[in-house]
Amino acid sequence: MTEHDRLVCERLTKSYRSGFRLGPLTMEVATGVTCLVGPNGAGKSTFFRLAAGVDRPSSGSIGVVAETGGAGLGYLPQEPKLPNSATCEEFLHHVAWLQRVPRRDRAGAASHALDQVGLSDRRNARIGTLSGGMRRRLGIAHALVHDPLVLLLDEPTVGLDPRQRIALREAVAAVSRNRIVIVSTHLVEDVRGLADRVVILGEGQVAYDGDVASLEAHATDDAPGDTDLERAIAVLMTGASE
Ligand SMILES: Nc1ncnc2c1ncn2[C@@H]1O[C@H](COP(=O)(O)OP(=O)(O)OP(=O)(O)O)[C@@H](O)[C@H]1O
Image: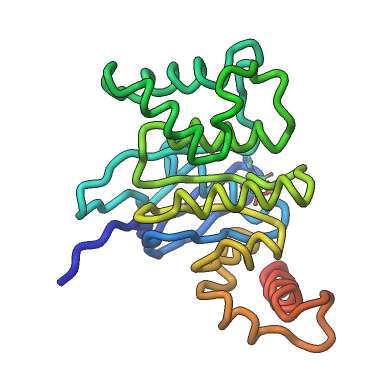
């Protein structure tokens, strides 16, 4: 049997007093990019907080099974707080320390992470001077600096212009080899540009789980959208919220 790394959810649930409940979810997420798609309030951020260990499940479990030697987890929350007065390099050096990267490896780890997200030429720039797109990519570098097996990116393309979105997608694609990457997004073009696998969430339940090609087959002629992928996502998101 070949070894493989995966994030495993077993009957995972999270309930809030508001009445919202995520799950029960039973699934495995392998290496590559999985896009988590769903309308506002579907439970995407709830899932990320459970996966990141920031919140605890109400029942069931979520955890990583690592068989090939990888370890660690990087999490870019929806609204990351970045220290504006630090330089990119200072910040990543600090994060490397927090993530227990050995002292001798910290400078290399910071510079490698900047390189991976295309920000090497901004290493000495103060974070407060970066554009929105650069801040997002720095957020990814921060989640990556300790070379984690699992990378969780909660809506990394929100608020970016088309050119910045392309740069961000390239950065995600570049770091996704041999890593479990989960990206939440509202944008169909992110799904097309990034996803090896798509999980559509609606009201805490999985409405679709599969690849992009099979997803397109769910499109119907009367659904809104310009492409089969848009129409299919619209059909599945509507079905999930009914
Ligand atoms: N800490 C919390 N306490 C109570 N209710 C919460 C909490 N966090 C989220 N919720 C509720 O749980 C539901 C799912 O929220 P969540 O943020 O996970 O959705 P989402 O899919 O990430 O939405 P969006 O796309 O708007 O970010 C919503 O109804 C939300 O109001």
